[in-house]
Length: 124
Image (tube, rainbow, N blue to C red):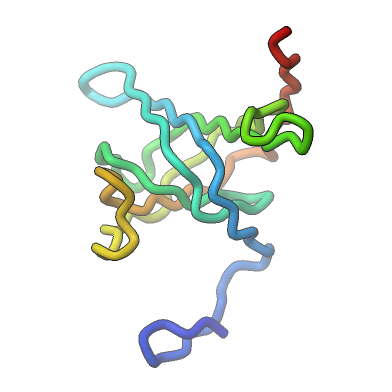
């Protein structure tokens, strides 16, 4: 069960979400052409992610998502990237107290296939 403002509702997700605030790069195409944005995740699971965005996207929009995996030796510099294609299943305005700079909306995506892990070599 999840508590939300004094009410309880049943959790419908079958997979565990990890509360992770990590860098995410989002790319998509719309009627204007190619779009992209850098942001932060709120939570991540093997089947999807929830992150904050400034630019508007619509439900059912396909997004290419790349998330930095922190490396314990290099701090916040990613040593690997999780890459996945996902479909937007929910867009909601973020409450004023959860907004970070100009990030105005929360976007939930379901991954169309499991994320792929790409290793990056550190700069020398």
